[in-house]
Length: 373
Image 1 (cartoon, rainbow, N blue to C red):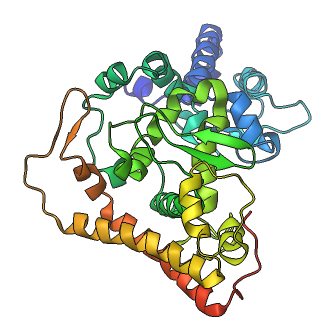
Image 2: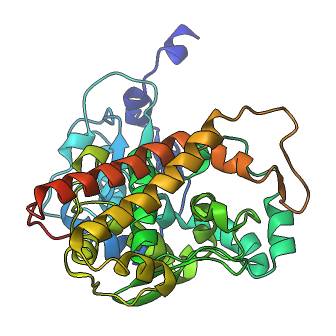
Image 3: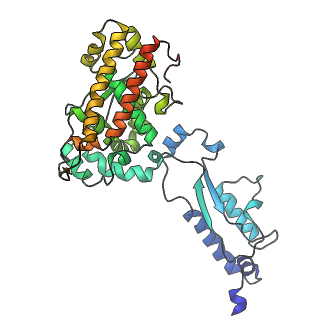
């Protein structure tokens, strides 16, 4: 009994009468290699578009196998090598000795991992079920909000599926977009943003039936809804949010709040009274352009931002009373309660944009010459 319990995997398979044991080992090892694959499916088309270097980098699937206790000459060495080469696509001229060792063990652990973080939108086993159940109700506000009932268990700053630095850039992008007239308010039919490639729409119906004064809140809260379209249009599902992000950063590699500067179309609007894209909200842009002087346009931009900062500050100071609810139709009472959840971010980032304009105004237009990427 003690000899049987002390038998290692290598010794067990080295037994001269172990032919049946070898057969069973090959079956179990092959099953282990299959079961060790990540419990998710990756959209390879999307993955290869975003990571064309996949086959030459650590982004590809990497096996992690504890050293098999089969030294050279062991009966199980050759069949194990054949399985490893076949299942891991290792060419004959590449050694596999790293998968073997001489430790005396009773078993081994086999697993896999991706060599780097992968954007969740590329995980088709994540986006597929969302699209399956969400896509059929996307166009019907009542059905959509019934499907979304009780699906938000966190405050909005934690619910929006982006890092805080990106969330803040999106808010700055909204502030700039409204000044330029590029971003429309949600009058009940959704919001959109003007880009050089055309108009890009934010999810509509949105997550919540909020009025136009809370457009920025609904745009941000509705971001998870793009996952219902990812399996079909992939990266294009984020086009509107990508354009909003671009407006909120100085360059694609300068995304922090303190790095924001007046560049691109915001600079052109202030300096020259023109933009490179036709605004969707021409009325808003005309309010800025009504000031014929550069300083007047900069002052009008700051005035727009100040009015928003004042509202957000008052909202942030208003206490919750314990009666704020979302009913079965998604209607929030009181409506501004959702915006209050991110009021501190709104105050911070609108102030960042306002102060950047003020600095640019004082500089006489001698800010950075970098253009927005």
